[in-house]
Amino acid sequence: MAEQYKATRDEPFSITHFLIRLVVGAIVLAITAALTPGFSISGIWPLIFGAIILALLDYLALKLLGANASPFGRGITGFILAAAIIYITQFFVAGYTVSLWGAIIGALVYGIVDLII
Image (cartoon, rainbow, N blue to C red; front, top):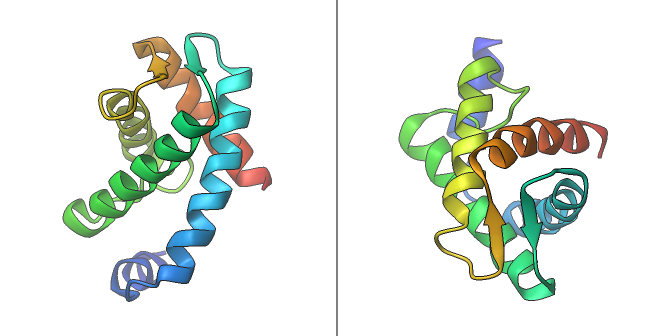
């Protein structure tokens, strides 16, 4: 497990990886918003910008903190980090609203949908 964690941290930045993560993140974010009470996205542009902000915050968390913001990737730390990133995103994107409970439930739904996709 330590080798997998180190490999994740040491991989170089790839624009292709970021774009794929962005598209998948937008799809997962749309499904999460549709299934989660207290979480709404008002259109396609807030969805796209929300996915960009989520991807950037996830990348920053990985590089600065060394923690993967996946609810199932790093246990309770990843779950809390994912909920925080979902909640913080609303301050950067107009049309993206989430309550605190919506962020917590959204992190769980996001993790499950991401795991399936």
